[in-house]
Figure (cartoon, helix red, strand yellow):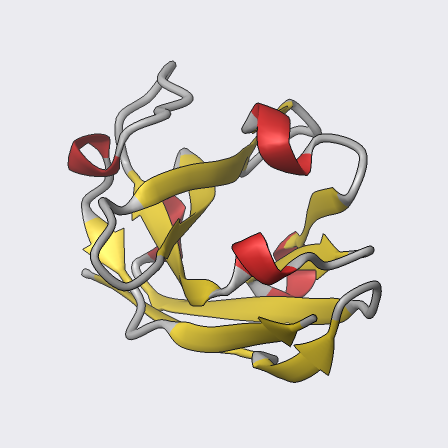
Amino acid sequence: QVQLVESGGGLVQAGDSLRLSCAASGRTFLIYTMGWFRQAPGKEREFVANIKWSSDITHYVDSVQGRFTISRDNAKNTVYLQTNNLKPEDTAVYYCAADRTPGRLGLVAEQYHYWGQGTQVTVSS
């Protein structure tokens, strides 16, 4: 199996930046795609970004395009989400996830097999 541990969340002001990290361990050779999702209180879990584990192919939800950047460091088995120009509407628990299905760059939570415990990001206005 694959274990995922997120870190880097916090309380910031609008316009600030945070870098979220997700460290993968276990059978990481199973991973095809890594994704970041977020869930605000009372809302559905929302896709934020994903990246192919073995290349730089990425996707972003429109609301973060140009502000967030997903990247990976395979040597460290770690995926990052650089979040810039944060807005109050970015407040949520951020989760990283891993999909083991070859050829798929999933955009919905149900397509991912492994999940971290989440890290809280709170943006004050």
